[in-house]
Structure formats: C-alpha cells, structure tokens
Image (tube, rainbow, N blue to C red; front, side):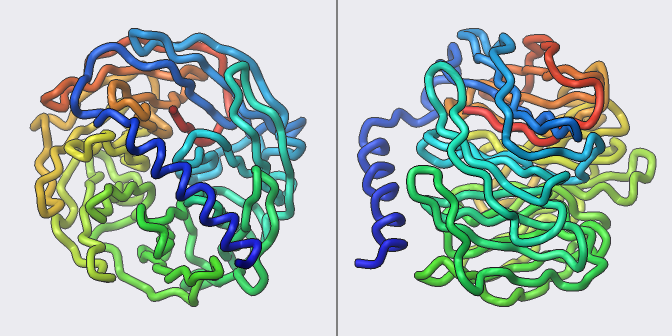
Length: 370
C-alpha cells in the first residue's frame, strides 16, 4: 500500500470509530459541548491563530494566540475558509497570505501546537480545505490556482502535478472546498461569476476544472451539506439590499440550480454557514450588520426564515460565519474586533449570547468552530 493510501486510510478508520460513538447534533440543542472557536489574525508583523474556549452556554473566553510561522496581509482576504479544521478535530490548517505559505497545527486540550509550515504552491493563499488526509489551498495572486497536499500527522507534503488553474487569470476567487465525499473540489469566483469544479482521483490529484456559471451575481462564500446541496452567498457587487443566496444540487456529479438568487433583502451577503443537522443556512451580511436565515428543503430548496432578512442583528458587519460541531451555536467574526455568538434554536431562529473581544481591530480572516 502506498504512503498516501495509508495516510488516507487511517483517518477513515478513525472517523468510522468516532461515528459509532457520535450522537446526532439535531437530537439535542441544549447546552454546548466543550470546544473552541478559531480566528486567523492575518497581521503582517506575524500571523497567528486566535483561540476562544466555548462555554456551556455558547459564550467565549479568549484563550491564547498561536504563531503560524508565516505572515498575513493586515487587510481583508475577500474569502471564506482562511482556516479549516479536519473532520476528527485533530488538526487545524491556516493560510499565510503575506508569506505565500500554509501552516498546520495539532489541536490539543490546552491550545494549538504548530506542526508544519509549507509553500502554498502559488501566490497569496486565501482559503484552505481538508478531507481526510488531503489538503487543498486556493491561491488568489498571480493567475490564481489550487494546490494539493498529503498530510501525515499534520505534516504537509505537496502532491506532484496537483497545481491546477482557475477559469481565468481574472477570476477573483473567494473559496475552495471539498464536497463531503471528498470526490470533488469547488472554487467560487467572485469576479468571473463562475464555479470551478475539480474531480479528485485516488492519488489526491485534482483534474482540470469544469466551469459552471453562477445563478447570481458575485458568488462568494458557500457551504455544502451532507446531501450534496451547495448553498452560496451572492453579494451582488454590494448593491444596497440587493444580496441573495442560491442553492445547487451536486448529486450524481452535477451542479444543478435548485433555488436561484433568493433575496436576503440585505447588503453584501458574503459568507455562509449551514447548521450541523443540515436544516438551516445562514448568510452573513457585511453591509447591514445582520444574519439572514433560510430553511433547506429535502431537495435543497431555500425558504427565507424572516421576511425582512434579519434573523439576527449584530453590532458591526458580519464578516465570516461558523457553526459549532455540536449544532448548538453560530459564531460570526464581526467588523468591530469581536466574535458574535448565537444559540441556534430548533426552528432556525437565533438567540444572541453576546459579543466577545480579543481580535485585532483590522485584518482578521476566517473563523472555524469545534
């Protein structure tokens, strides 16, 4: 068995064992289970991952800053997924957009331990995704590309011939993500208003992209549920109250529009999170300091939860979103240097838990939760 195949097999066996012990998140939306929230500092003086402990009520306590060994840019990356946590919550991966590298950390009860920092395979990495022992990074600089890595215990090894182009040098990419089955990679392109879809082979190498036209304007952040529905935020160029969210059916290898451009009635919807049970999606609106919720139907169809688009309001622009792994909480990185927290209720409504300081005033990127 090859080294890569062994690397791929071990996490699958571990995940299978964990699945036997797991309790469905939708079964109980009570007190939060222990976990953490992570945000990328993205500072040019030295990049860090900032950690917050999750409390039983979903509130947060700042608990350390962990250097990545690289540098950030100190400015918005215009992306979703600047940090990513693997399915088993053992490793965290982060981009260093200022030094063209990515970093891996071992997640420990007392914080993070830096394992490796590797060349990103391109210029200005802005988004990273992980599935089992494969990691792919999206590089937005130059002509733009994706690049793949095999990981063993968090150590990053570039996969030969895995660097692949985007649809065009002027794509304006925003996010790369694996589908839950790990068979495809999807990239959203803000400027080109397209999606690049790559097939991943048994050696972890991505194909050249198949290009799909977006249903709406300025596709930005997206999330893909376990039923292979992609939910995509559409910023519509920041038009006042003009944003929307679309859904797509990715089953049977397709990319079929289900709900095209369902309005948020809000401004600059750029980020998406899906509840752990797959019933609800939330769009973060940077221009109107709000979160818009949608229910997700069995076929992936979207229905807005609140006619005015305000499922929750925030004290500053919502600039990224993550749901906790136990399904109880939604977290948002806010434009005022805080993290907002909400309880996800059974009907999809959100109850504010508060906002929690501890971020640099500007330049932060990404958010992930366990």
